[in-house]
Length: 411
Image (cartoon, rainbow, N blue to C red; front, side, top):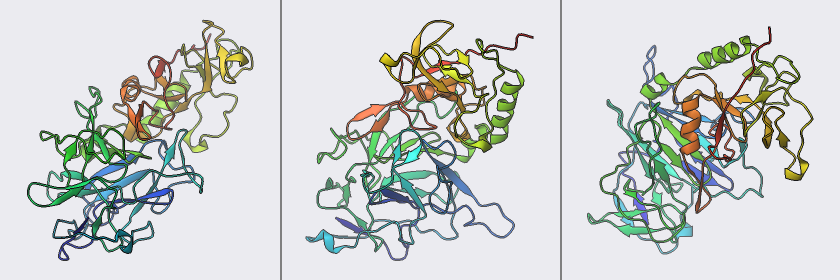
């Protein structure tokens, strides 16, 4: 199925995610477009890729970034249905690749631990062009998400095995191979948020219940009372990478990097100590990056939350290499270094860093930790797992996070 774009509208440069080999690409507006000299560009919102804690492992470079900004372009260039063609030899149509000039950003598969899947052995499940986002050019700048499927000629294209059908008004609609899933949080993205229900979005932007599996031929049921309008905190899953949509108003409520740094310094100024070794602990500067922990790095027993300095005793190797027995309460579980969450857009509130995700040890506020621990993220073609938003590690334990118990200085 091909829906040919209106030539007067232009190529589909509003927002498309594409996949080639093990990479997906995202078409978004660059921050500087659409503004006159001396004027601030109008920002529609930002997409934050879960699992990278503010920066890709090799740095945000060119079209590969962990945080993608959508801003207004000088001229409208969305797509709309025009001419429909049925083709019997779909391979004749040249399929777009990430080198196409319509692609602004590249999104790669995220593996637990905050790294991108690379190399020929990493088989991606992100569709070649996974989705597009259309934003109104006038306030309130509503953003709508659609499943994509573009070829190199800027036509909407779906392969012969993709689920597709004719709508009552005579248009063709369909789903990408592994689908574009969206979840809108209940109560917005705030201190009162709760996870919503995952839905699938079609090429025409209609909302459906999930298929039996991501690539099933039979579509889900149409959900007529829900729309494809993105809200602050909406999650977009591309079957390989998950993105968080933040509106400008939502980002104003989020903590800033300056606030996160002030919290780190305040926590260190309290001079927490290891209750056994009595050494003073300190969270490292984010400028140092997530390298090997230094001697002042705080460590935590993730089952009980007791914070210590690093030590080598209490190993329970019969339970696993990371399993240790807490010397204070005798609970046995993973013993990991603590790292502050540095992607402020993932935080629901500017609360103090009081909780850590289990078992990765990323630290954030209580409400942020509890929200993400309750949010099931799609994994593969059937499963859902709660994961740390900062590194993508699957959460374990009864609650997925733990309250940190620090010991203050003895003096």
